[in-house]
Image (tube, rainbow, N blue to C red; front, side, top):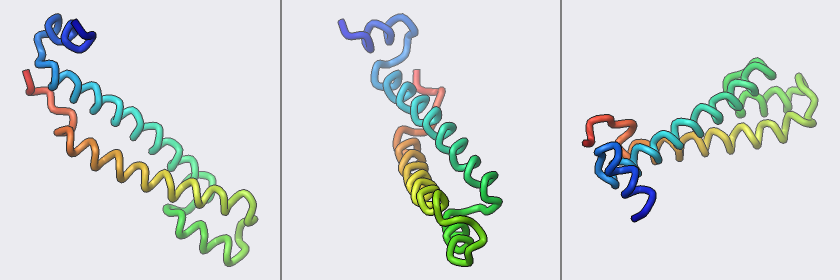
Length: 99
């Protein structure tokens, strides 16, 4: 008996539904971490997007290093966040009505 089927029987939730819930919880946790990192950049630079940060760098209002690296990381975080949201939607979100 797998851990999923064992747990599923103990909590009386379909095994597939339980796996989807677990995946949804993991995605929500990753979203929280990602949002926290993005918020850090917003607070650090006082702008709301990596594009605005890049503009500040071009205008020499901030030092290019480490701002360029931060803008790349910020852009990657936004893309990762978008993928997480798409995956969350495909799992049905955090649906609690799947017994």
